[in-house]
Length: 150
Ligand code: CA
Ligand code: CA
Image (cartoon, rainbow, N blue to C red; front, side, top):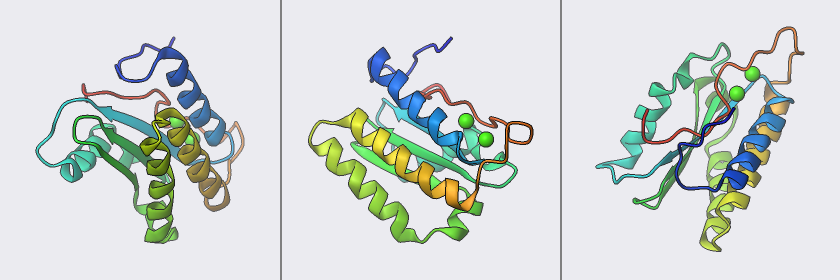
């Protein structure tokens, strides 16, 4: 089912990351995505916004999509949230979560860091945007990791 196009994590790691997204989204209407950019880009802070839009992450009903962006060649890492969630969490929530994930990255624990970050964001989303039940809550955005092709 899941075709691996990220070219970075192993199949097993990819599955664990996707499982973390699926588990998080069982507790919230929010949507979490992970994007891995493998090529060098001119400006990663611009690219992350471009990716956010290309993945249509600004089109969720409650504007509560959160993107984890990893730039392999640029050594960049961003977590960005859509308007809805951004209005509710302080900037320091993103900074703290980002720092926690980067600490893991520095120790070579990429997958663990990402999973922990997803759990932390999922927890926050579950408070701000509780799951609305299977009848109302749809999976608005794919849980698969996206790669350069977007
Ligand atoms: Ca959802
Ligand atoms: Ca989803």
